[in-house]
Length: 520
Ligand SMILES: *[C@@H]1O[C@H](CO)[C@@H](O)[C@H](O)[C@H]1NC(C)=O
Ligand SMILES: *[C@@H]1O[C@H](CO)[C@@H](O)[C@H](O)[C@H]1NC(C)=O
Image 1 (cartoon, rainbow, N blue to C red):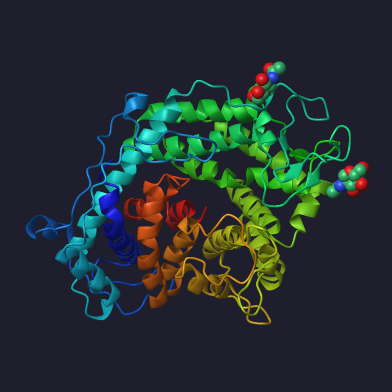
Image 2 (spheres, rainbow, N blue to C red; image 1 turned 135 degrees about the horizontal axis):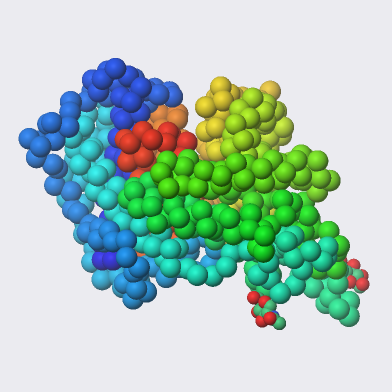
């Protein structure tokens, strides 16, 4: 994948370009015609004048942008030697290998484009140029997605809570079990029990119970295959997704009980911890995938109702079990992600009014107490990995705000009594991001990974239209690219963010599905 390294600057250009393009597409999607540009959410700077249309595309020469070669899209099983990123762990940890080290400086065209984007007032950036750039990004992202999906197709492992060779304290093999991440044996007791907390240090023993990994793998693979189905129309992806969903939630032999009573279990305890509820928060990815999968003619008609039944029961558990209640009352990211989960499930069940109530309440029980007048997130700042958790909670808040757009709750611009707001939380972190974390006021183990914060900024720029975000995006992009080159980047979603352009353009999903790629 020699193309990766040379993308450093181009990616900066194309991400901003891609966002502008999304803006354009969104604007046009809801207006009478492409010339009638009207922002969907909030105005972003000056009005962008765009030339019509796809006809021009053929006539107007595309800008000279160094191209990366997308891997060929193929639906046959790929062999491992061809796969550029070995899949490790639960969240598709990808690390590039086989880098040919080729580096290419920005061409004059690159610079012209980036300057034009930054100075949009007199923008010579044409719709055609944007489209051309975005198409290349899109092709590349889809090729990566299809590779991921093909790996998922090949997996013959059983994904089920029943795979584990120990049960939860209930003795029921269908009960989900995961071990607490930050708990370690107490060396002063003979058997190490009960375990004690050492924040910021993950006990590798959690890997001996695989429910968590399998759950996250199932969710990720269904998501990736569902999206691959959307882009390729190959029904084999849909078939496999249906199999995976049945296997995890429904099949007699392998189903999971709809509760997380034994999540984040600390050894020596009989019940899990409230924090285990967080294990399922990425479930909205499955719902996103289902949005596309159900359009497949051969999709089994009884599956979604059966899944809805499962989630009705699980939601009841979320709303009534003592553990989940404490999780809901958490004053940090755990509370926010509780809301993320609950809203996602309400929406899956068609309970929009209930979802709206959760979003409204989040203004006061999440934004007010979690963000200070200065924009700090005090609960997350207390953590040993304070940067990571500040971003993590921000992602949850922004995910809620995204749903808020659909539900008629403007969380983006809400301000608490002391002026607390999502924007303030983003802005508080901004100067530290543009200095690689230097001067961050509190303890922070494990450094300043900028990948997820960068994605937050891309959304922030879109929502708030503030130029300062673009500057920091341009600064961070090459650094994140470097991390990718060095194999430090954990998820493929970095690429998927670029794919936003296509998703919007096809207008089959809506904005939310795209932003999910960027926010988690
Ligand atoms: C570890 O065990 C010792 C001996 O029982 C106890 O005094 C101590 O409080 C325990 N430490 C923690 C952090 O629980
Ligand atoms: C139980 O599962 C763990 C994790 O998969 C594995 O390492 C261990 O060998 C298994 N033990 C037995 C007795 O099968």
